[in-house]
Length: 61
Image 1 (cartoon, rainbow, N blue to C red):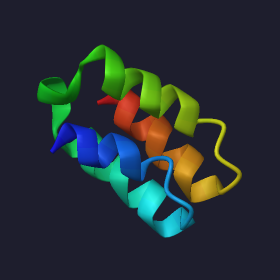
Image 2 (cartoon, helix red, strand yellow):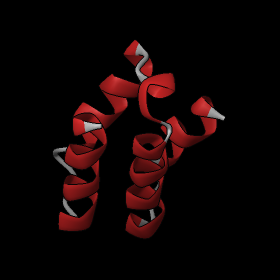
Image 3 (spheres, rainbow, N blue to C red):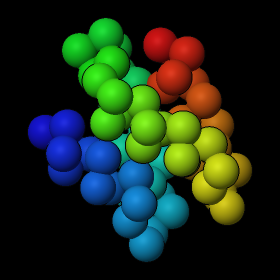
Image 4 (cartoon, rainbow, N blue to C red):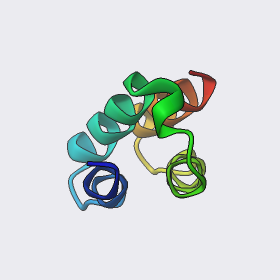
């Protein structure tokens, strides 16, 4: 599941990217792996404001 969501954070469609960030955030501490955190950190630089917001919120959780 994590691998699919990490890949989705880099998907072409911005809706898919921000929804993936949201899903990772909802997984909480279970998702606190190096790979997930790195993907979310990269997503904070997304061109789409929803993507940036969801990435920041996911990191906060």
